[in-house]
Image (cartoon, rainbow, N blue to C red; front, side):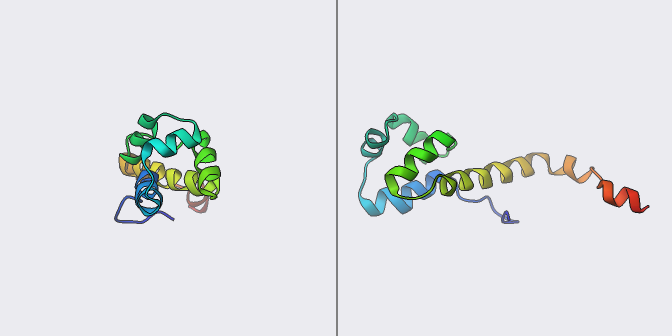
Length: 102
């Protein structure tokens, strides 16, 4: 369920605050370990790039988490952003179930 009043944290925030900082890891160290560029890691941390399935598998392997952990956070952010962008349009759509009852 999406939080009603605030955007969920971007996976990059979690990566930075829950993994990099406590483990004293650099972006370069993670990039080298998982086989991606430092720029890719940096853009994720800054919220400029989404977590892809490929990145989710790589981070999951390195941090002993699951790909679903990373993708789930990204989906929450994507769903929130889409809802905010299209809320008015979605509110104009009427349920087929409601129309059949009338």
